[in-house]
Structures are given as structure tokens and as C-alpha cells.
Amino acid sequence: MFRILLTTTSFQDTPGIHHEKLAAAGYEIVRKRGPLSEATMLGLAGEFDAYLCGDDALTRPVLQKSLPRLRGISKYGIGLDQIDLTAANDLKIPVLFTPGVNHTTVAEHTFALLLAAVRNLVVEANHTAAGRWTRLTGHEIHGKTMAIIGLGRIGREVAKRAAAFGLNLIGHGNHWDEDFAREHHVTRITRFDDLLRQADIISLHTKLTPDTKHLINGSNIGLIRKGAIIVNTSRGDLIELTALVHAIRNRHILAYAADVLDREPPPPDHPLLGLTGVTLTPHIGSRTHESVQRQATCAVDNLTLFLSGRDPIARANPNF
Image 1 (cartoon, helix red, strand yellow):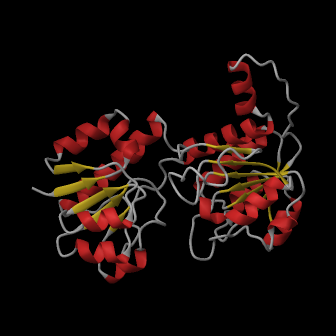
Image 2: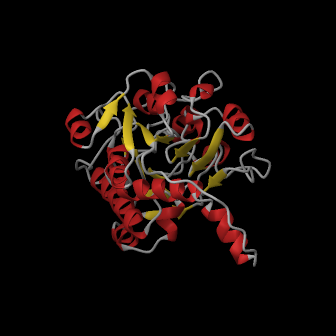
């Protein structure tokens, strides 16, 4: 019997067929509440045949200690930045993931955050719940220019919805779907600094890599139009925290709406918590009943196919 470490809380907390599929596989399942730190993973490593993980710290030391027992990793979701893929390749550990399962959900959450930010929705709802009839003046997004950074599956879904809101679209990214951009009127801006200068709304949908870490930083955040809005449903470390906080406090950035942080969950003294102009949600962009079941089912299918010697749905490192 294979012994599996299950850490993703979305998988565990959301009812659905994925629980039945995992139970039917007949594995011994050990459940932990992730995301787990490197120290916690080091304490567990070496005791499992596979990880069915979320955003746990699967560093080189963790992966090394996981061998020789560990056969593979089934990632719940598409973000791989917490897995040392270079180490996984070196150690010949297959990493499976679930592309194409959450783009609709995250795109919808992007607009939930954007509209909440421009209309002061959270602040106003809290005022009303407390019995205060405080009427703040918000902003429209119609006619504004939205910059989409990353035109992958999620970025493309955001572009489709943005058109319905009457937004003008510009985009930036290494992987560019020219046919899609032409059909949906997304103008490609190749120089990142030019993109920042033109945008009223910046929406981040690129993956976190060494090249994209602090993509927006103290050197270029001043190029963004005064009064612009940034929406981040990708990864917190795409923006340099110190520069972001400074720009918000100085009202250069009108609003920052994000589903992700550089540290999750954040410490009580995190500088974005309670900051005026900031709307935060606890990494729930893909956490809907529909999306969780898609992701979880795909992650279980990947795991069971792989452990039975068959080809999984998608590998992050296809050579192994």
C-alpha cells in the first residue's frame, strides 16, 4: 500500500467526488494542514511514497530527504514556485500538476477584487453592517486601460471579461497568442516600462520565477500613472513589498487588490494588513466548489495513473 501525504486544505475542506476517488485508490492517506514550511516538511520527509501537495515548501533539502522512498509529487493546482523543479529534475522526481482547471474561477475573482477596490465595497459593507450610513464616492472602470501581464489561460479569460466592461486592453508576456490578441483587441506592449506608463489598471497573471520576482519594484513603480489600481491574483512576490507599501501610503497607487501575499498566511504585523486602499483575500481565487473539484480530481487522477505505471495528465518535468 502506498503512503501519501495530503496537505492541500482546499482539497480537504471542500466536499466532492475527489474524496471518493482518493479513497477508492486504497492508499494510506496522512492528512496535514498546509502550506507546510520547510522545517515541517523536513520532519515528514522520507516517510511517504508520494506527496499530494498544495503550496508546501518542497525545497532541495526536503526532496533529498524524501528519497529513496518518494516516487513522485502530485501538485494540486498550477503554481509550481514552491517546488524546487531544478532539484526535482536532478533527483529524477516526477512532478505532476493540473493545468487548465482554474482559469475561469481566478478570472472571476480578479474582477471581484477590482470592483471591490474601485467601489470601496468592503469598506462600505462594513460601515453599513455597523449601522453607519457612510457614502463614499468610487470610480468607474469603463473606458480605462487595463494592462494584463501574462496572457496565459487566466490572462485570456480576464481579457474576455474586460471587454464586456468596456476596458481598453494592453498586454505583456513572453508567450503571446497573436490570434487571441487580435480577436479580443489586446495590444501587445513589448517594453514593460511603457506598459506601466499607459495603464490605469494593472492585472498580474504571470508565474513567479527568478526573472519575474519583484517584476514591479522600487525602480519602476514610479512609472505607473498616479491613481492607478493593481490587482494581483498570481503571486505576492511579483511586487516588491517595500516599494508597494510606499506607493500606496503616498497615494501614488490608488488601490491594491490581491488574493496573494509574499508570506501566507501573513504575520499580524504584515504592512499590507489594514492599510487604507488595500483589499486582500486569503488566496481563494481558485477556491470554488466547481474549481476545487476539477483541480482535486485531476490531482488524484495524476497520482493514481502515475503510481499504477500509466501516463498522468500533465507533468511539470516531462523527462521523468
